[in-house]
Length: 208
Image (cartoon, rainbow, N blue to C red; front, side, top):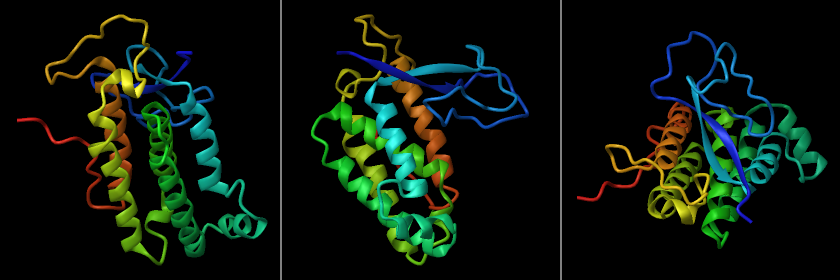
């Protein structure tokens, strides 16, 4: 089936608003962006494969509280200290390696986007740990999956867009509406990562 879910992406041309964050980080529940109305004037829906919500729910719980891990790991994560940061590096590495091995492009997109979002929402571990070089390596590896794999696929392969057979508008950069929204969403995620790493280079090299 062509089941879909969506996440809201703040429009580039949205009116200025003093309150709230710029991304809808919880895909299952009502958005709680403070002070920003949930209207088409401010947000557009990015249509994603249905599997995204399942991947995000599992990965976010695994990274934040160690769901599925032994109680010792969960208790160490609860402390929110450097030791917790070290563990989160290992959990992130596990999720990244798992996602990279997923065979179908659509499911791989779901898992990699879910991991990118979950890691950027809960990001203190990127600077509070004892292995900063490993953090840099892992974040670079995540960016490379976007740049050298997923974003080289077309929209149909990725499973983005509503997929009802209607042609989407293409912008001046040659991006469909859905791809432009995905790029915008990744730009927001990159901004969060770049609080901790110098560069999150997710965007494919433009063809000459």
